[in-house]
Image (spheres, rainbow, N blue to C red):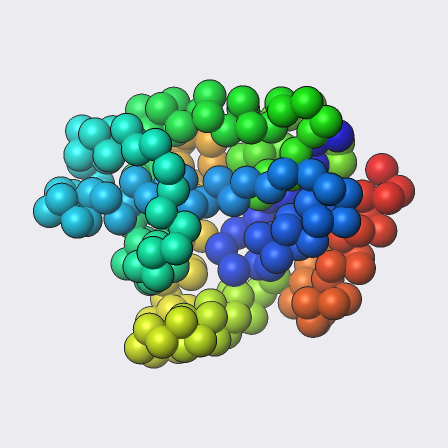
Length: 204
């Protein structure tokens, strides 16, 4: 079973994907961390995330530094959104994601193009979303818990800018797959959103 969980930033897709993976005993991949790793590497090398060459050069990493708190920073998120628009970057990371999805027994992947590009054969597919204001509040709270100082209005502006970049890029834009189930978590807490997602998977 391959489960695709797509959606915009801070919609809750990562939390939901982890819960589905845990419930079904499947491996989970947060594909956004791949792009954050590339974006952060470009920044640390003094490069420009908007430069396709700089971004492609940063794709040759072996492991995602998941324990690095900078990976969750606003700067890393912005850089990830920019580098992910480069077709060459998406191509460089494509097979890594597809190999993970096609593991024996299945997997759960969350991102922005899982159900449309990475694993279009996935069943079930979820498209998780929420209002920009709710998503900005969630991201703001997450950054505060990580001890990263920020301002809510800045986070909201960043969320809206990332939505525009993700939906408007030529390479694998953020879009709901035609056979994906829409799950709006705007008025749901974590428990309710998780329960709703597990019910969707069970009914697929």
